[in-house]
Length: 131
Image 1 (cartoon, rainbow, N blue to C red):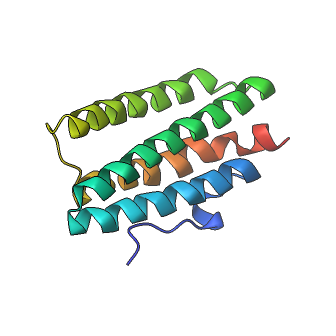
Image 2 (cartoon, one colour):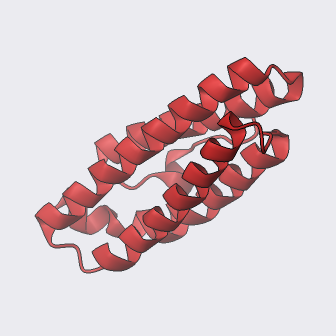
């Protein structure tokens, strides 16, 4: 069973590239959640790295579009991105050093962040970035 499901009504921004990337992130979080249940540390590490790399690329996409369109909420939005990336980089470093584990609770944390961030922080950029 999926931890989270992307729907246009709840998470759509009307910026096709961002919506497609959000859908992929949701799928990757679901995969990490399922894999974490099995406890295969190598598989978890691979998925963690892939997810973080993809999220960083996605944030760069959003930020580039915001800058190109002169989006007024850019600075605050980037600050949220930077905070999550720092948290993820710390977890990633600790995981690969054997100082932390990635569990289903980790996937739930990312899920909760996305369930807040996408509708409350990303959706408002839709009109500006799709114009």
